[in-house]
Image (cartoon, rainbow, N blue to C red; front, side):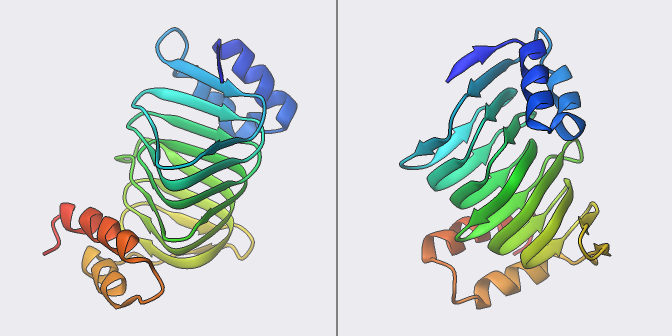
Length: 193
């Protein structure tokens, strides 16, 4: 990976056809944050965390064997697909392909950022403060605060409570024990007991 300037990042996004979705996110990094660029797919053999106020652009796929976590005010842009065990995103996420997680995808940016992807495939998707849009959600969706919109069906998901998420997680037998514990920790940290 290499560091690039914001004008270089915008040019890359323009060439990849992602300028409309992601170029405005780069503006926040003008002279402030670090923008890292990978000209090819990236693979991490364990957990990967994108630090607060960092931007990562991957030209290709992003594969994380463990948990993929993005920090506050971070931006993750992937021109391919993202594959991980689970994902906890607190910043902006724009993925041209699918986000595929064996466990869960939890997005929570405090209403500051958005989650824009083609397809979400996971056991459960939880929105908690991040407007989210996908062509298709192939998962159980829990909307807690902001809009969650499936563009292929023009469907808006109904709002639920954290207690609904907790009940689903405790009853789901298809998720690994580690993912259940991680997800329950996130739910319980939001005040459900």
